[in-house]
Length: 173
Image (cartoon, rainbow, N blue to C red):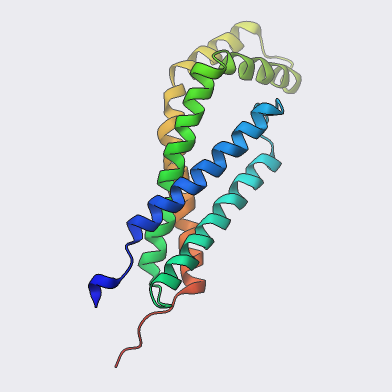
């Protein structure tokens, strides 16, 4: 009977790909509207809402495929796996966007940030700004593993909450 249970890895992969594809479509939409430089709260809320929706959907479908049973560990595995797969796909899109589609992306991001930084800190000098930008460029690679870690943690938290709400295990006899 144990062999007929659905595998969390298969569900995590499938729904991780779905979330990654939806996230990429959202990114392409932002790019097409020239809003891909925006990192405001609305973009973040929409991204988080998409993640929550897909993890809940995947958990619900897994529970249905598992005869209405769901353990907390299965929900955690689903959330974490979906977060990992979607993060990898989203970061691949981001790498293609910033290196192929729009190679000057980071320079424009720094130009936008410069205006805001000088407005918020009038004592900032051009030399200080240039030094800060150079330091940030040297550590830009850190954004990739940090993005993956954040996505995994977010998937873990969403999986935990979803699992606690939807949990149903076999009755002990």
